[in-house]
Length: 162
Image (tube, rainbow, N blue to C red):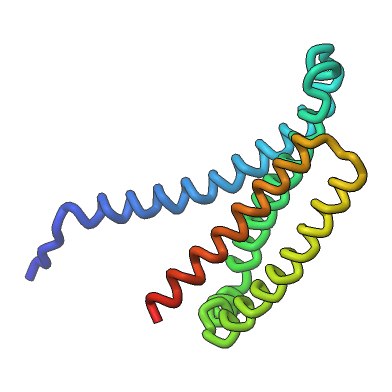
């Protein structure tokens, strides 16, 4: 007896494999882009325009490139380890979804946020007393207020839910 299989199943399978391949290539692209930024950042410092008017851009590109390279390479290495040791991947998924670990992570973030509030405020005051440019101090104040207002907003939203 011949079994009926819909013709769309191979299409979905190939689509799924395409998505998986795209994710793999995405990590390669992120890693390569990070390396390009790490190398390209110092190269920009030799161009006269960037040396005079945009002095900090090459160093910012180096920082962004380091972050991108670290993320992409870390993802590629993790996938390689998971391919060789599927039991590690399974254990990591269990740990990631464990309620206790999620709660511990949230408590640690809350404590870090509390410390960050005081430290960030002290840095803004110190910059103000040191005579740093008012634009820089006001930018830091705006960011500080944004974070604090977002915290208050989330607090009110969560109180309404509970």
